[in-house]
Image (cartoon, rainbow, N blue to C red; front, side):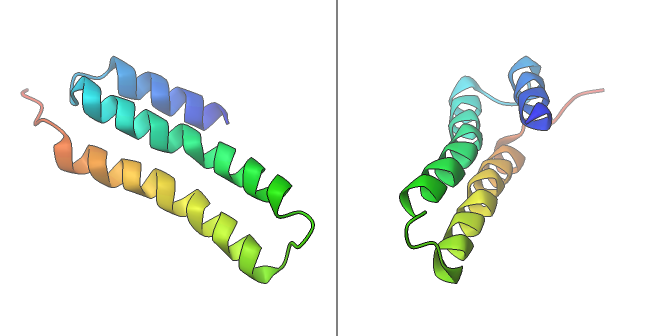
Length: 79
C-alpha cells in the first residue's frame, strides 16, 4: 500500500504526463484494491479457483493497463 501511495505521489508531481492521463492511471491503480476487496466480499460464499483467478487477474490487469498507458503517453524529457 505504501508503494501505491508513493507511486501516485511521483505520478502527480511529474511533468511527463498530462492531467487526463494522470487521472486515468490514478483511477485504474486505485481500483485494484477496491476490486480485490469487493471481489473477496461478494464471492466469499462460493469462493473457488475460478473466482480466485478472476480476482488475481483483475489485480494484475488494472495496474498493467495504467502502466502501459503511462508508458505510451510519456513526453520525452529534455536534458
